[in-house]
Image 1 (cartoon, rainbow, N blue to C red):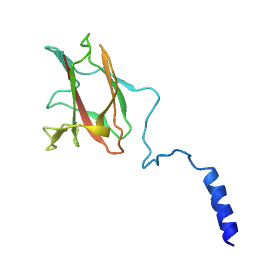
Image 2: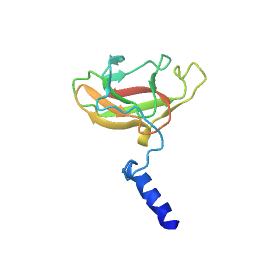
Image 3: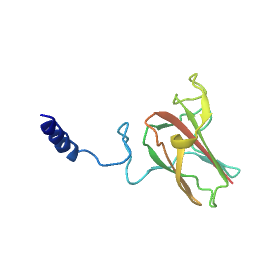
Image 4: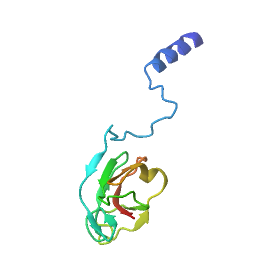
Length: 130
């Protein structure tokens, strides 16, 4: 009986994902990031939204390439996060994203690519500058 149970477990495991890291949730990660073409550039600072405007929905696994248009490699960037789409006008609070919540995958003279490496949903405003 014990041998039969072990054999059944072995057959069942054969079809499982063999990844060494368990996946806690399904994330909509794609091979290519979604291009974000919104935002403003003023005095060498790009903002993907206004402080009191509508922020970008940033669900778990989201992968965005922001076109900052600075024309030079940014010296700094700050991902701001909120639980509300209109962060400062809908009663939501704002904090700076860190760690897996806002992973920078690439940065160059014209774009910065950011991924939400968690399963949590947020709203995002990227600020990038020289």
